[in-house]
Length: 281
Image (cartoon, rainbow, N blue to C red; front, side, top):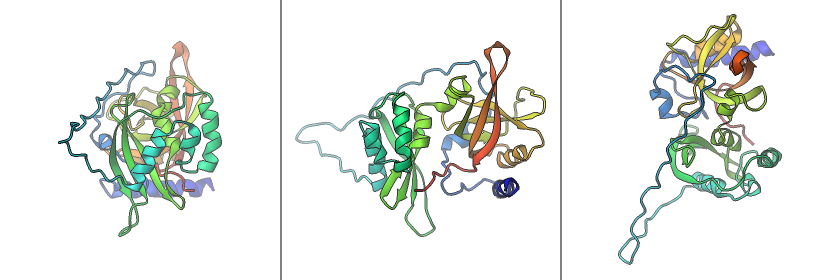
């Protein structure tokens, strides 16, 4: 079974490589930033992330009798996203979440330890959409900018039999910066993350028996090195996927290893999914 899975992933990734500039697989969240991001050395593991500038709210139209009220038609997926973001409690947010029945227990546990409440949004911008050829899209990706993430992060909205639903799992991962917390040494020593995988022109630190890759979530200033066993199927799949200049998006399982001096390094232990497509209901 593991051989079949490995063969499938390798074939999928190699297919993208041979096609040149890859056309994202349905459900893969792509960002303009991913293509334009310069190949710079990742921050050292012990470095702290600097705070991001807060984007100022866009100017509002003038009020008064002579001012015309702006006419704005909110599409159904955007309306679902706004209802999700403005929900005052996780119980209300669960009603607008993908896999809400299964996710509700996770949300209950998560918000028993983390702050709950509406998300303060600065801007929402349509980023991408996918659907069968000739049909209406069944998936939308929006770039959501908040007070703590002025550059924005992608949020997936998927059409289900019950209507449009938001992928809460990837949303909370980006909104609460799970990858940076994990890479910085907080929480458990394993985790699964939506990441961009890159080949790099800069030499990664040498770890005997391992090959280095650059990984980062779709937000700036969070890139790190991660390592896969050299000459393993996992390394070959990643190398075929992340050709120079063409980052691959995947859900990766990582393990954090501690070393002397309070530092750590990240091992890629498996590919959970070869794209960022949310699970369907």
